[in-house]
Amino acid sequence: LLSAAIAYLCFLGPAEVLLPYVVKNDLGASARDLGLVFAAGGIGAIGGALFMGQWGHPRRDVTIMYATWTVATLAVAGYGLATSSWQLMVACLVFNALETAGTIIWATIKQRHVPASMLGRVSSLDWLISIGLLPLSFALTAPVAEAIGARATLVGAAVIGAVATLGALFIPGMRSI
Image (spheres, rainbow, N blue to C red):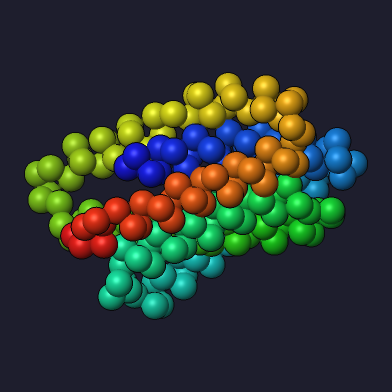
C-alpha cells in the first residue's frame, strides 16, 4: 500500500494536470485531440479487462501485478516524450490497459484471500492509503513543472513512480499471499 501511495504521489498529479497542458501548449492540439487521447485510454482499459477475462488469474499473481503496474507507470513517460497526439494516445492506451490488468489481479487477490466480513474494511483501507497522498501530488505538480518543465516532470514522475512500484516487489515476503 505504501508503494502504491508513493507511486500515485509521483505520477498521478503530473499525468492529470500536465497531459492537458502538453496537448494544448506544447503540441498546439485541440480539446478534441485530448478527448481522443482519453478515449484511447478507455479502449486500453477495456482491452486490458478483456485480456484478463480470457487469460484468467495468473499463477504468479503478485509478480505479474507489480510488473504490469511498473510498466503502466513507465508509460506515463510517454506523455512527456510524445511529439504528436497519436503518440499520446498510444501512451494512454498502454497505461490504462496495464493499470486495469494489474488492478483486476489485485481485486481478485483481495476477493480470494480476505474474509467476506472484512472485505469492505480492507478495501476502504487499501484506497485510503493508496490515494492518501494525491492532494500533495496535485499541489506539487505545478511548482515542479515550473522548476524543471512539464515534460521533464512527466518523465521524472514516471521513472520515480515505476521504481517505487518495482522496488516493492523485492521486499521480503511480498510475493507470497
